[in-house]
Image (cartoon, rainbow, N blue to C red; front, side, top):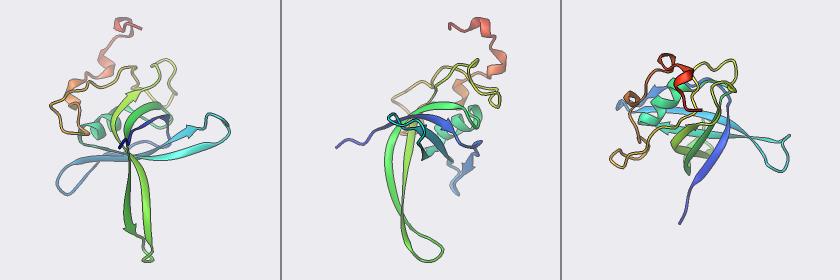
Length: 147
């Protein structure tokens, strides 16, 4: 069986990092993705990130910024306020990447950088890096970047 989603789109809102009662970081958001065959049609895809990935996206991404991600499509059943049974579809993103350079990002985004978080096999799924692995972008001079 194969369940892999690879998406690129723009964030529809600023991100809010939340904690579960057990202290696990989670960040839920949506991205706007244009269809290939008709650029006038946009799909809004719900995304969920956990642990280190959630901390990473909430710190470095802003509304309108282009991002790419890899994850899996998951469903969950729930009951709404009227007692109706519902099913939610969402992508649980394991990896999130910057998809535009600092110069081409929107004016609302001040912390973009065109690199992606490193992968390590020792981390649990959904937490492939530590937020401490990254330097603050304000400390990096643009002349030091290789692109």
